[in-house]
Length: 342
Ligand SMILES: *[C@@H]1O[C@H](CO)[C@@H](O)[C@H](O)[C@H]1NC(C)=O
Ligand SMILES: *[C@@H]1O[C@H](CO)[C@@H](O)[C@H](O)[C@H]1NC(C)=O
Ligand SMILES: *[C@@H]1O[C@H](CO)[C@@H](O)[C@H](O)[C@H]1NC(C)=O
Image 1: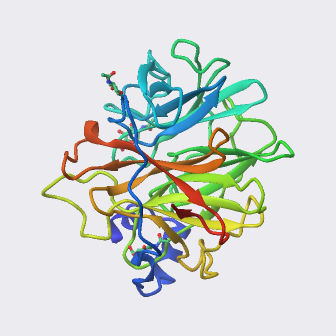
Image 2: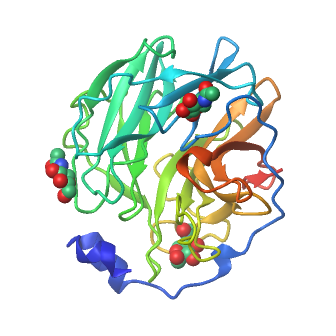
């Protein structure tokens, strides 16, 4: 627990330590039986932190690996075909030797596609978020703009960007974080190089239980009809391999909080605050031959009229190494006001 806070002398760390509440097991209880992932054909492996978007009847899937892999398919089911790298020449951002480009988040704003990404290496807290733009989504069409200059801080880590544009045009930008979980800031237009210099950031999700847990990979989703803003996030150990697997229940899983406002306060299905009371409702966790689902996103698929939760996961029967991670997805039901995998 102390490893992260010891190295980070910050107000948030002090708060996390002194206001720690006892560990409860309620978070670990699944709320329902999880169905298996829906079928996927074609290239469905070597997938981490996928981001889906549809253009002219074709689905595009962006994911971590090989300077951001781009694949396309006529339907989310597939067949998925690998098309090339988004940043084929890498990025101008330098964080550290052995760095990698992580967790793309692709959004259409106006007539331009914005791909936000993180540059990092396992264990580094001085990561940086950058952006590339395109009007076609295909490999070779992207212009890299480098860092958007979000301020670095000992309180957080600049990874796992996500953009939500509200009907009024306002951009809500979440990121983080491993350190102190999920942060949010907002912009009147999508940030490009240097646009985020000096902005104020707000902690929106923070698990302050005594045993510090990784919380990262946030994804904001505004439900098209019930008015709620949901924030999905991944909790736990994402990528351990045998014999060092996390204790059962500590591996990656997908949780959610919601609010009537894009900026929170976010609460869980028991009414607990997600920033002050360790709130968070489980959406999907390991089950059967599905292990450590996470790195998720949510998209409305109008061709089937349903909301889709997509993610990466491990099949223990296949293996745990990076290139063996699968692309998975399920449909979500929001009938109760809370997303249920169906
Ligand atoms: C499948 O996609 C991954 C990236 O997600 C890529 O590295 C790999 O080369 C692709 N495989 C084939 C056979 O195209
Ligand atoms: C980031 O941190 C690493 C590890 O401490 C260090 O080697 C690297 O120089 C830092 N990068 C920058 C841009 O400061
Ligand atoms: C908070 O951390 C505890 C301890 O690791 C964990 O059991 C729980 O599932 C976490 N809750 C959320 C909402 O992340």
